[in-house]
Amino acid sequence: MATERNDSSVRLAAETWESLFRAQVAVMRKLQAGPAFREVAVNEYDVLFTLSRCPSGWLRLNELNDHVLLSQSSLSRLVERLEKRGLVDRMPAPDDRRGVLLKLTEEGAALQKEIGRAHVRDISSLVGPALTAAEQKELQRLTEKLRHSVGARPAKQD
Amino acid sequence: MATERNDSSVRLAAETWESLFRAQVAVMRKLQAGPAFREVAVNEYDVLFTLSRCPSGWLRLNELNDHVLLSQSSLSRLVERLEKRGLVDRMPAPDDRRGVLLKLTEEGAALQKEIGRAHVRDISSLVGPALTAAEQKELQRLTEKLRHSVGARPAKQD
DNA sequence: CGTCGATACATGCAAACGCATGGAAATCTG
DNA sequence: CAGATTTCCATGCGTTTGCATGTATCGACG
Image (cartoon, rainbow over all chains, first blue to last red):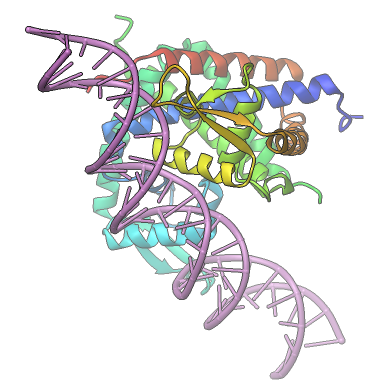
């Protein structure tokens, strides 16, 4: 019975998603317009950011692809560009010779920090005035819960 | 003092945004993979959807652009494609001859409904199990609040 | 050990995108 | 009302993206 859903609950889920999506669009639009994304595109920064948050420093291309809204081939070429710009280093994975490990270069880490600072400031100036601290915490909790539930699910039955 | 923000509040806002963004990515990834978006891309469906929700039926290209995360030129060409496929009608705006009015054709409206149904089902199967009804309502409230606050703001000072 | 399917990444190619710009119409200014 | 400025949409052009496919490696199985 948990999987059975009536009209109103289906409608609620759809409206919730649409609201989340539109909010994301609205915020993203402002962020993109800011000066922080002159040098690197949003997807590129996203990759740099994800690499910067990786504890070991090295990350598989594969795993990176789970965090970014890009196809495998596009990510492959995006990383290729970042490498040519000297922002990331590549290395064949030691335990799986199909795999590729990625790591920020010094320059890449520096650029990420620099853009990250401006980025965070922009975000704060958008989100800060919109929601109280408690509301932000609650929004964070709900979106994390949503993400984990969605990510854990093994896709949808065909 | 309302505009002054300390480190922890800046960090909270950034973490909140990242969580929202990642949740959006996770859900969008699943939605894109579904069979609903074989015929039309997400951006294209978004346009059809927005037009379907327009009370008068006709919508300015200009206003449409506020809802979609696309540049003006890309939207222009996207609409051009939809027109060639017979999904939307164009018409010069009567009161402003620079403007263009858009409306779904019968076929476009039918396609939007068909895809919309599948889309809503997919969303429900992702969001429904993740959050309780109360949580979904709260998430909707918070994201709406965020969107309105961000949208109302006249962009950022340069 | 050899074969077969699955997985990880790269690449050819057409489609879609953003930036810069163009032209036409509206609006502002003196 | 003439000229300057702004707004709205279209278009040229180089870049980025996704799909389909290719190549190499891994893991499973007889």
